[in-house]
Length: 150
Image (cartoon, rainbow, N blue to C red; front, side):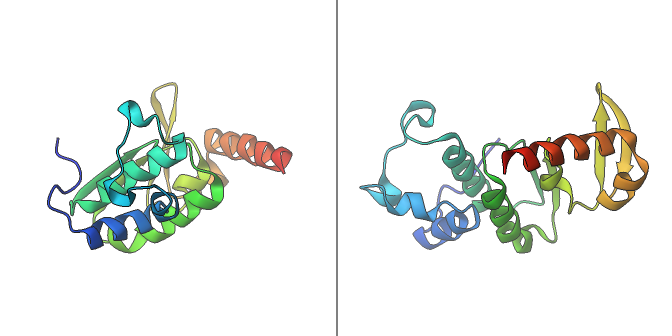
């Protein structure tokens, strides 16, 4: 599987980094875009690594994008900014997002709720919020957790 775009220009890279909310920390690196990435991305935090992976993915113009728990290490504010910045690029393509956070999927056209590996619900956020007990339980647990963290 090919990721990114090997012949990307600096402008394309900066645009992808901007969508992924990664420009700020890349600009602080001594070598900028030419900085080395240690084995396993050891010189970056979990959230920074996720944003770099998202930027690399966004460089490629694809018909289908799959983000498998790609936002889990991002705080809620950064996640929202990334999803908002990506929305124009992903508007006319198929995007599959695997996530545990309701905030990550609540704007999706279709959400598939899984419970013990089986489909427990299918619909948009509003429908599932009103009709699906598993989805409601997830909302309740996440809302409580977010409220306690404040």
